Amino acid sequence: MSIFDTMEKRHHVYEYHEKNIPDETVKELLWKAWKISPSKHNFMPYKVSVLGPNKQEDKFKMWKMCQYNHKRMEEAGAKLPREDTSVNPYNDKPEEYTFHTNPAYNHVRYNSHLLIFSARICKLNGYMKHVVKKEGHYAEQCEKSEVSNLRVASSFEASLFASNLTALCIEQGIDVSYNLCFPGEKEVWKNMPYLWYDKEQQHARVFANMSLGYGKYFRHQWLKDRKKGIGHLDLKPEAEEIIEWV
Amino acid sequence: MGIVDTYEKRHHVFDYQKKNIPDELVKDILYKAWKITPSKNNFMPYQVSVIGPNQQDVKDEVWKRCTFNHKRKEEVSFKRKDGDGVEYKTQLGNKTDYKFNINRSYNHVRYNSHLIMFSARICKPNKYMARMIEKEGHYAEQLEKKEVDEIRMTTSFECGLFAAHLAGICIENGIDVSYNHCFPGEANGWPSLPFLWYDEEKKWARVFANMSMGYAKYYRYQWMIDGNRGEDLKPEMEDVVKWI
Image 1: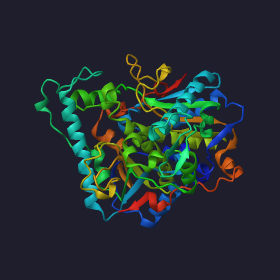
Image 2 (image 1 turned 90 degrees about the vertical axis):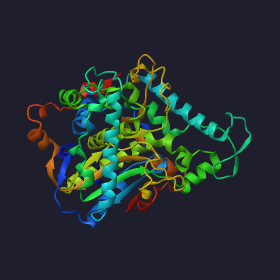
Image 3 (image 1 turned 120 degrees about the horizontal axis):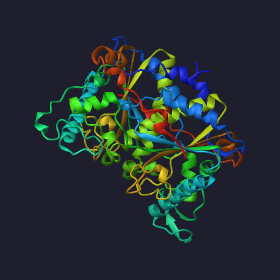
């Protein structure tokens, strides 16, 4: 099946079936994604933390971080003047804002496997060791002090892995969903030590979350069921708005 | 063809053939990539700038930004000046002479059929999101110039999804692609390329990645073999994937 036909089958999941994916299947898919994902200088400056079916407490912690981030963003946003949106019902009365838990985050909490992409300090392979030693190349990916500078490029690379994994999952009839709402700061992951790239400072940089499972209820269904009359208006920008021929 | 078979065909290109990809085919591939790429709240907070075969001056300028960035990173890291010939300490602690050499890995940014640049874009809300903002007070960062820096890590992730899809569709069509991540990260690092600016007043741009397209003539892995440069291996999967 073509990439296009494969990826057209992906939909954001609101609820997964309780049936879990066998760990062995997930391991094989992860191996294939690792195998086909490219990386600058072969560093792969990210790690993929896998939370399996028995890690409900850790999934809950991540879900709470998403909620926390969403809430504080909206609360802060309610107080700010906005540049391009003239309409904001809470600009003049932020105290009236009430936070609602977003069902779009359910998949982070309840899934078969949750993957968290975060920063990793790399080691030089044999070839890069030679290039550093003889040619004086500076390998940022090996330095804790460069993680923040590199976070944009590392996030892009992690996404290549995630996208390849998604395609492999869909081939196997497995659904996936992404989450990009979580704190961007490095200091706020104290209770999730496996994410730290700096153990001393307890710093982590999270790039994305991705859940795996068998979808039971999808966002497009929720839009039809719960957002009657407006759900169909949730469209992407036109291709011409994104793609510009110079 | 399966996903693994498709993506296993991708290799970093050092030299492309002079033959260009027809614009119509590039348009079709870009449309398909756009169609299958998801985005948080359907914003797609990035722009995909396509620099075709007739825009060599633009490609030259982007390539210059890459080599400039590489040079200054190395010089700043070791506090050396270009070609001063003084010994300095590398990351590994040994001493060597510094001499900047233009990295051949960037050739593909300059000479290709089409160069794709991913950069930040200020969005407009679709009708559904406009209603969420109006009725529920949702705060859409993607609409705000002042949030571009805050969300650039996640925007970059979204660009990666588009790029990965684009790469896959290219490979299916016998087209090679290569990525580039060495360029200035500063918002004011792109004064001569106005099509990248998300803030026209300040002339600010945030670039996430470059991606070249074309028909390959010479790959990096061939250069590694030809120069007997040893094995440039990925970290083991266990170094990257951690079961918690």
